[in-house]
Length: 87
Image (cartoon, rainbow, N blue to C red; front, side, top):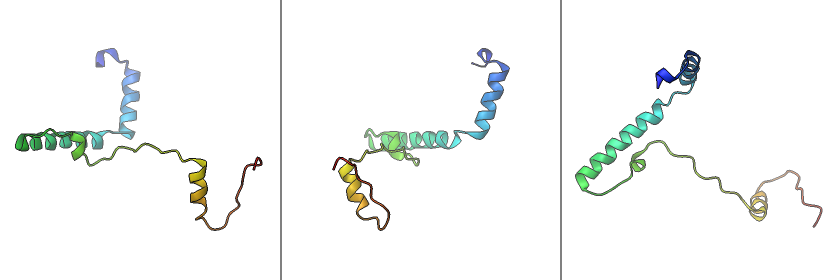
């Protein structure tokens, strides 16, 4: 891989890696995989390594309907309420 990179690309990658290391995610992946393998060895049951991960994946963002937003806004004291002109 390194023989295909220019020295400029290598130095840019090194600068990026200094600021954005992936060591936390890598360590978490390694240890969660190890724990899952030990669990499967002892119990004989299949389990996903993500079940042992300490880092949580970002959840899917749920979009709210206009009615949901209006119901949430009822509990906010003060402020100005804007409604569409079509009503």
